[in-house]
Every structure is written in structure tokens, then in C-alpha cells.
Image (cartoon, rainbow, N blue to C red; front, top):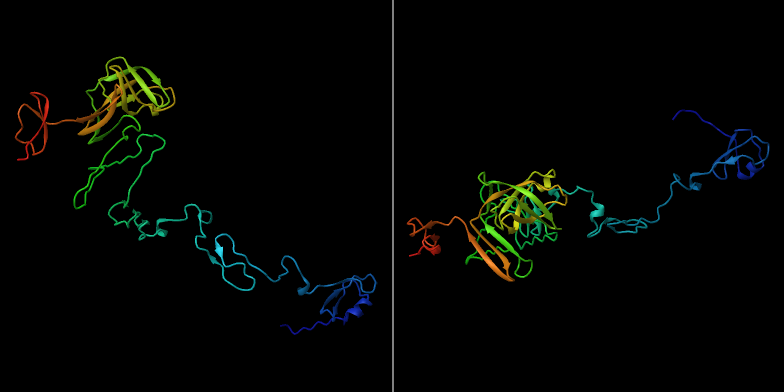
Length: 331
């Protein structure tokens, strides 16, 4: 410190009460251990005594914290002397986590209930082996309450999109089903269905379109030769939603058929074309005269007047002499 000493006049609080200092003069109050600034009015005791730090209160004055409470998601409070605040069990929920804050690196890759590997592969009910993008051990329910079609799409770019892999000892039954009998009306399923545009199929002119809440009925200028369960591609609408491939729900006549209504606008298509449908096997149910029938259809079965020698045992073929189905003997 610099070797400078400053001395001020001093006196007790009593002496200050009977002293009138000059304007701006500062003296030392020895009773209160503080300074007194005089205003030069000539009145004894005039001016102001400066407050000590211990006499200050309010913002910036310091003080003593008497209690710390535990906020949302914390436990350990209130603390009135010393203690520790910590996160409570189940204390963190969506309100405490920022959007997009949790990444796959923060999710367990060993929890059998739900896990995500470093490569982003997911396991539900089992730990993902790293072979498949999604592995599930348990039952799966896809419930489409909005009656949208289709409810689930499995798209494969090369080879089979869906493989049923039976690893049981005694074999299992794989059940493919549509509507439960009596709960939803006609339904169908197909195995090996492939849609393709057939250049030999004529373009049909749509002369009229009528709609209900859920369906659209097309009337054509000529016979369409399209069957229920096949698909039709429509064209010519200024609304792209109408230019689509639709499943034929019913056939009203040789020039009329009904599909699921593609859109709510009235920008109807002007032409249509049957989409080639090649189905290995299909099954559907329908009602005729209030009686429900089950229809089976197998496409492209071998046809001959006598049993072809190249057939495999158990293979079905059509005998064209009487249009009967026959099975090659296993013997």
C-alpha cells in the first residue's frame, strides 16, 4: 500500500449531535464506527451518517438464505442449513426434456423391453441381434381405426418382401385372414399378387361418375371386362388424387364398377385401364342371395389332357378334358 495516511476529525455520536460541520466535510463517528457527511447548514447534527454493511438490506445487500426448496423432479428439500438436492425417482418427464434431446446413443442397447443399437436397429421384447432393422419377440396388432386402405405396406426391392420363417420343432400354422366372418362383410387375401400395366388392355372412356361418402362408381362407354378384386388405373383428372390405381370392390354391370372413393373433389377422371393382376392363389368371401360363400382362385395352374410327366408330387393341375382339378400322386 502507498505510504499515505489520511486522518479525519472524529467524535462520538453524542458529539456529532452537537456539531455542525462544513459543507461536504466528512468526520468519523467513533460510536457507530462509520462516517458522517455534513451539509454545511450550520445546524448541529445535520447531514447524514453513512450506514454500515451490516445495516444494509434489499437487493445487493447480501444476507442469509434460510431455506432452499426442491423444485419439479428434485428431492432433498427444503434445506434450512446444509444438504443435497438430487433427481427424484421418476422425477424427469417430458416437461424436463427438450424436443429432439434424446438420441439413440442415450437409449439402452441391452434392455429386452426396448433397445436401440448404435447402428439404429431396434429390438422390442428381445435384444436386437444386429441382423435385422427391427426384431420383435411378441404379438403385433395393427389396428387401423380410420378404415384407410392399406393399413400396412411391406415393400421389398429385391426378392420376397415377407418371409414366414418357421423355427419350431413340430411346425406352426401361419394364418392369413381378412374380415372375421359376420364382422365386416366381404373380404379377401391373396398370395403372390403382382400388378403390371398390360399394353394390350384397351383404354376405357369414363362417361359418368357417381359417388357416396366412401365409394366411387365409374360407368364406361364399352364393356370393361374387369372382375371384382382386380385393379383399375384411372387417368385424366386435374386432381392427381383421382389418377390412381384402385381395387375393384364390386362390378355392377359389364360397363360399370365401383372402387374406394379416391378423393372428395369432383374433378373426376376421364379414362381408365385395367391393371394386369397375376395371382398365384387368392381367397375371398362374398354374399349372394343373403348366403355367404368362400371363393378360391388359383391362377396359371398347369393345364393338359393327360398328367404332365414333369409335375412334382402333390402338384395340382387342370385336366382340360373335364375341367377338373387333379393332384399328382406322391407314390
